[in-house]
Image (cartoon, rainbow, N blue to C red; front, side, top):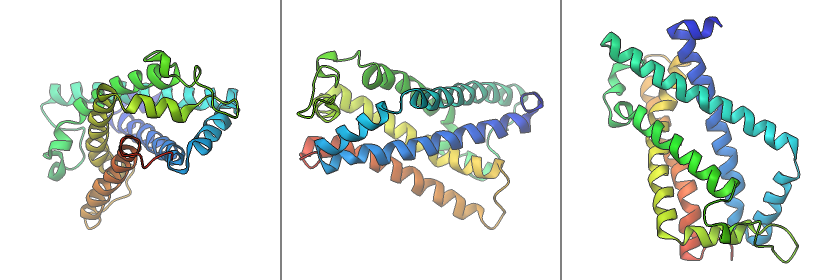
Length: 224
């Protein structure tokens, strides 16, 4: 448990748990983009995931644990920083003064709240249950995930919550990826400007990729 007892250890856990979530978010996006290949493709993809059975729940448990650790340590480090009067969360004062750096705790809380909403909405399917894939079956007898997404994202409250949360994700990642690389010791003075730019680019790609899903549904470009 030495990792939890030192500042360096806690920041290392933050970095590793954050990396796990970035990997999961990227893989999740690639799967969801199958929506653009038509209803049959994304419904088959969703059916394949459900067919993983216990393995799917193991992945979910690991990611939930990583998320809880990340949130807890993020709050802990923020309170520690404020108590010490120094900004020890960020490892470089040159980019901790950016809006993304200053708002890390707030964007993180927005993301946490959204993930709870997302799980209740699309995993447990308790929000707008009449649109749930469990109640709508496609011609092949599978849960119609395509119809669920299409009907939900055409609702302005759902679309608004989704885009607002994606903006928080983009801001959080643009700074978090930089801090993660530095915490893991993968940077140098010369590479720092490149790392900062790569963090912004990676965050923008994820934001645009996820935003393309509701935008594609609304414009009729997705799932034809």
